[in-house]
Amino acid sequence: MHVPLEIFLLWASGLTLLSVVVSKVSDRFAVPALLLFLLVGIIAGSEGLGGIYFDNYHIAKSVGIIALIFIIFLGGIETEWKSVRPVLAPGMLLSTVGVLITALTVGICTTVLLNFTLVEGLLMGAIVSSTDAAAVFSILRSKKISLKGNLKPLLELESGSNDPMAVFLTASLLGVISRAQTTFLAMAVSFALNLGIGLLLGYVMARFSVAAVNRIKLEHEGLYPVLTISLVLLTYALTTLAQGNGFLAVYLLGLEMSRRDFAYKKTLARFHAGVAWLMQIIMFLTLGLLVFPSQVLSVFGSGMFIAAILIFVARPLGVIVCLLPFRFLWQEHVMISWVGLRGAVPIILATFPLLAGIPQAHIMFDIVFFVVVTSVVLQGTSIPFVARLLRVQAPLDVKKRFPIEIEQSEGMDATLTDLIVPYESAVVGKRIVELGLPAKALIVLISRADKFIVPNGSTLLEGGDILQVLADEPDLKKFQSLLAVIKPEALTLD
Image 1: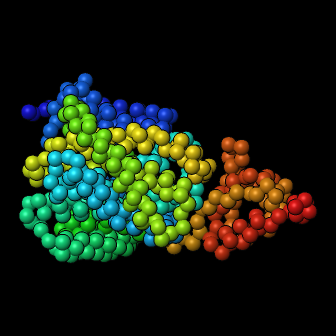
Image 2 (image 1 turned 180 degrees about the horizontal axis):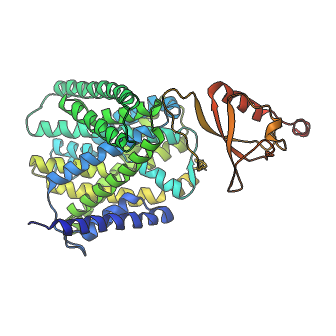
Image 3 (image 1 turned 60 degrees about the horizontal axis):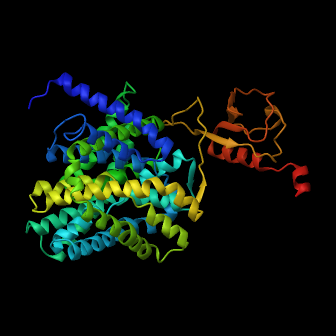
């Protein structure tokens, strides 16, 4: 049916605006935003108030893949390498072996207790095997808490890197069902090539992308986001055409770019954060429109069974096996297991069997949707409570926002850094002119009691001040050493 452009734009803009507004509910009540976006789509769908009929799985799959490209890229570029490096080994085990264990456990249980063949059961396990732990951090931020130790970087790494494994397992099992790929050896070789090409092209494209952004002197700043969008899509397309894992390549592209300096880095990161939010809204609205609630309710029993196996058996088993060689407390094991909620990727993967014409595909899709919603509602909303119960919560480190920012550019040897003045520091009560600042260190702005002060030589420093300092690396270290000096009376009290 032909829909006038104006009507399409009215619905699209209205639903997007409504999704942005209802996201406030996520912040206030610790409800994952993805669940709210799905609900908006369902309400607007054929069985909801909107009455929009949509059952085009080809479009839904394409929308989902494009959205995931930008969401995964943002996950990479927002990941701090220095925090990820200590948990690289356990994180990669969780995102590969952990996903495989989850898929096998769910698959075997599905085969035994539901009317599925072994391959169909394993396909179901593969579809629901990846996690969306990134959604957890939006919930924790809304409650002003974080997680202790290495929990946060470990979960960030896992959530950003485990989707490629789920995609590979799903595609391989579909190949087995269609008789295109039947031997374990063929699957192993395919996996090695898929992973290797993804890693190689992701790294190569990251180096190329940083060089391109720095060396192509564009006349208009607005073209730099266009440039990075094209580089992200080019990375995915080239890798996929080369039979590599495009999602892994895109994640590595973002991760490698986060480690390097390039023009307009902060501006581009903020731009892609906005793009990722838009992609999430579009993706979940589309998936919500695709769902027929009456059909989902018909698989209530099967869905609850698989959700229970996934949450209470498969995920904990994968976590225990993968983290066995590492020193994690039992409370951390439980928290990592509980944080493994499911998101958009399983729903998108559930469209693959539909497009392949698998006999049980429609039942799979409805079960997967039910499992995702159950996981988000049960695990997602209880995460702050579980974190407090296990005593693994920590205060959220909220970075102070300054009205001044400086973009790192080629030839610039100074960076803008925030430094806190310790209450016992010897500089407390001194004027800036008395500090003897290093030659290439400048205090640009001071944040004090929710106010900003433009300093001059006579400005007195107080304990707890947040200083915005422009300095090169050697003089920044000298300034940090200056702030670290404790006043004599504080040492006497100790």
